[in-house]
Length: 293
Ligand SMILES: C[S@@+](CC[C@H](N)C(=O)[O-])C[C@H]1O[C@@H](n2cnc3c(N)ncnc32)[C@H](O)[C@@H]1O
Image (spheres, protein in one colour):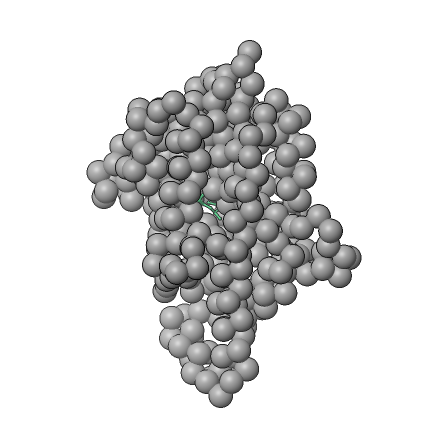
């Protein structure tokens, strides 16, 4: 049977609709997914899946912004693919940015607005498409996209849109999942199956990101590989899950998932697809600057 269009698949999974949303509902049992939806960041001595690894990734992004800007207090920041607002709220709260978050999925924007209201943090959230940003030219000094562009088939259009809304010498910091450039056809197949199982478009290479930034007149400043702090540690959890499924406690795990109204078959398929692909993926932070005009 034909799959529904990608946007519908993305909207459904992040709105808790359909079987592919179960993986996020399973993460809900361990993580703060009502506010954060990224891969997280943990040094070796910090807990990864449990605890605040997703907030820590935002701290890392905020620190990159702070080191490329003269100041952060009151600075206008656009968070593209803001999800449920955790990153925007954290960047406003910890660094003093005046943040606007934009996301394709209305459910996420409702949650983000509610999260900011409950935390008494002054942020603005709008439903919109990252390829057609509804803001005037030069509206922002800073822009972030935290593990969001991996969901966009046309990343180059996002870079062009970001270049337009960033003022000259404004800073973009993005984190994302990319595929290693030297993978074999079989390995690329694992990565494509993972993307399909998680309702993502084809995963890009870092070289495609850097070329896209350059085409949009965004000057690349740094590329950092943070894989060992996120993807590498996430794979420990996929390993553990699959080992437990191969052990006598399999039926206990499946019963537990069903008790939370989660479908063990779909979740296991998604974890298996991720487990096979993770060795060929990298997590990177890129910093780029809009050129002076
Ligand atoms: C993995 S989540 C990351 C969310 C958030 N940045 C965070 O760190 O919690 C990816 C987000 O990208 C959003 N997204 C996907 N396609 C988009 C588009 N075309 N325009 C805007 N947002 C989009 C999704 O709705 C989702 O909230």
